Image (cartoon, rainbow, N blue to C red; front, side, top):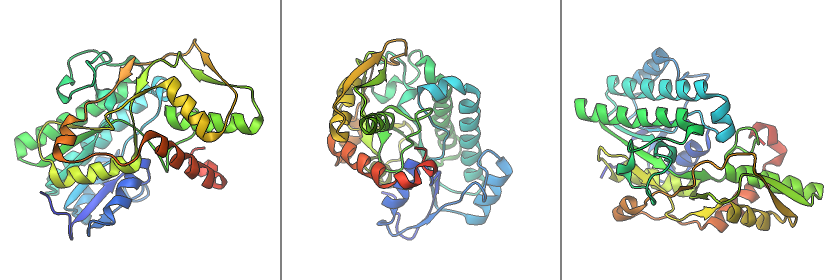
Length: 317
C-alpha cells in the first residue's frame, strides 16, 4: 500500500472535471495537493514540464491532463487530439523520471479498446483489433500513454501505472454541444427543449448502442484507491460494470430534467461502437465499488448544471 499521508501529490489537469474531482477526494488523505495552471507550466513544452517538476519535486503524480471531446470533436480535429495528448504524456512521464518521482497514476480512456471487443471488455483486449474510427486519434495517444508507463516501469523500475475510466459525467462537465460527450449533451438538449416548449428533441443515431457511465466522484474515489493500492504493469479498468442503451439514457435524462416531448432520431448521424462495457472484475477484486446509481448521478449532475448556469460561458455551457 502506498501511504499518501504527508506526501506531495501533483494533480496534472486539475481544472478538468476528473482532475478537479481527484483534488477534492485527496483532501481527506492528509497529503499536500499541488496544482499548476497553463500560466505556470505548458504541458506541451518539455522544458517547462522539466523545470516545474525539478522545482516542485512531488512524491506522486495523478496524470489527468488531456485534450478530450466527443465524436464530433474527435472527427473534426484529429491532429490536435493525437499531437496534444502524445506531447502531454511523453513530457510528464519522462520529466517525472528525470526528477526522480517514483509514483504516478496515468489516466486513459475506454476508447483504447477495439471497436468489436468481446463484452464486457477485459484488460487483455488491448491491441487485439481495429479501433473505432471516429476517435482513433485520441485512442492511439492514450494507448501510447499506457505503453510509456509500462516502459518506464520495465526499464527503470518506476512505479507508474495506468487506469482506464469508462464514460464519465458529473459536476464540472462540459455542456458545449459542439464538443461535449453524450450525457452532458443530452442534459443540455433536454433542458433547452423544456425551456423552449419544444415538442421533440433530436438525438444522434438509432439509440441502440449500449454505453457504461460512471459519476466523476466515484471515478476520483477509485483513482485514489488505485494510487494507494495498485502497482501492476497492466492497466486497470475503472467503471460501473453496468450499461444502458443511448435511448434508455435519453429517456432517463428527459425524465430527470422534466422534458415531456418526443425523442426523435437523426439517422444520418453515426452510432459509434455498438456496445462498450468494460469488465470491472479486476477492480472489484481489489475491494472497490461505486456509490452512485446512474439515476442518482444524473440528478446530481443536473442540479449542478442548474446551479452554475450564471457562469455558463465559463464552464462550456
